[in-house]
Image (cartoon, rainbow, N blue to C red; front, side, top):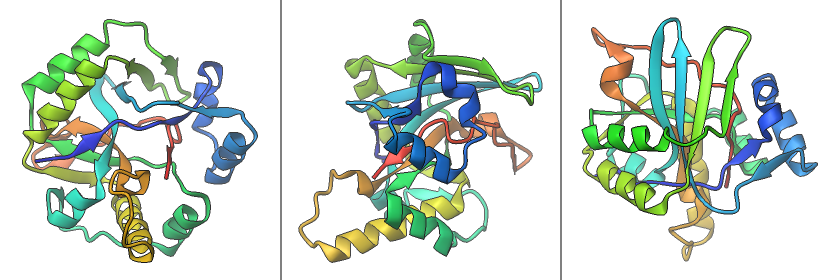
Length: 225
């Protein structure tokens, strides 16, 4: 049973969305601290559509549970071992920003498709084409009742699989464990117990056992932990 939830995304203004992909980690932090990026006052899911080379991919920006990772609900797609790199862990510890999503795949859930289709009926929050010719469209999922249905649908998923972002997943888990050790009375609902992810249907990104990860806009959203 997968535990996913909405998050108060750190994000660019609409007119700055395309340029966000060229920002370094340090520039994202600087923009936030200087007020050039803003954070949602409340948690949301985001439906993210990528059209790339004649293919269309539809995913959901969300947060996944560290405990799901520790308990084996979140698994590796391949035999790759999640390595905690000092660089990624130190950035989380220093600034408390996760700017890279972990790509998580789930086996087909028809009701999730219905929810994404419903969200697309509204005007997108972002729509742009990057220099590499990839078209990006992003919708906010405002409706709490629809978000609740998505959470319940994902709870019916036995496992999520890490398709990309093994290092940031491992670093997020290590950071969470450090904070838990420092405070045995930690709040289990605090943001550090979750890491930012993109949920993608497994069948849409795999062919003959090979995974093709869509080219999402780098640094489009960040998770403040």
